Length: 135
Picture 1 (cartoon, rainbow, N blue to C red):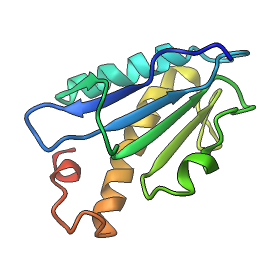
Picture 2 (cartoon, rainbow, N blue to C red; picture 1 turned 120 degrees about the vertical axis):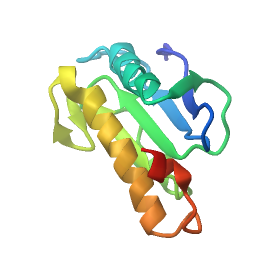
Picture 3 (cartoon, rainbow, N blue to C red; picture 1 turned 135 degrees about the horizontal axis):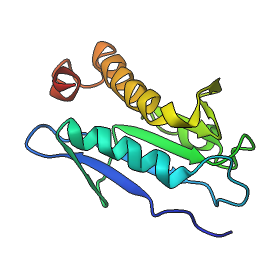
Picture 4 (tube, one colour; picture 1 turned 180 degrees about the vertical axis):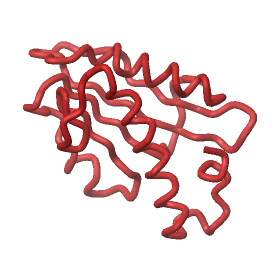
């Protein structure tokens, strides 16, 4: 299977690290420009004071980017053994909800912030998650 853009991680600079693991499908029949969606997300992330780097361990959020509704990256495979929040893009859908391609990056950023706030409320970080406070 042909590989899409490289997997990436988003790591915050100067604050407690925020790590986002991005996994792409093989790109066999994309309905959206997967790389463009992640590049637009990266623009928002950079504007919020974060930097995209590879090699971060133990992500705060997993982002699965499939170019079509077939969604060959199975979300269940990524969430079975992890407590890490997982957000799935399947063509023009984010977690099963239709989103115009031009807005996917905005919805992803909102979902990332929501996931961090949920983790904080659930006490998974011992109530001391400054990542969620900083967002």
